[in-house]
Image (cartoon, rainbow, N blue to C red):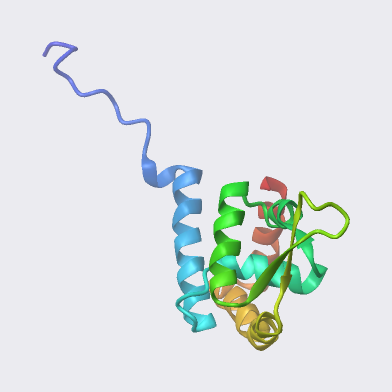
Length: 146
């Protein structure tokens, strides 16, 4: 048989690749999160913004993006959707009028406080297939990869 007609040996299997496995785990974790949170309009990325504002207080859009590891376009889109839901509000930063400050509204504070236990449950359910030692190992390894 001619070498050109012979299929090359398969050395690359998508299912064995780290990016593929991480994407699949992310899909599962997001589905678990949405199920536990019970608010189909609240994405994990929006939750990250809300809980960061809850923890840190008012932040510039830039600071919020850096703390949640979102690019500027994603940060702006997340903020716009949260403003539409009246969960956050934007104001010119009193220290620098060129910046926009973002903070939780009263409704935003209420929703974060009411969903903290559900978010913790999503964490637990996502890791549920692993025993305690495996959970600690996974979390440590993920921290090293970040």
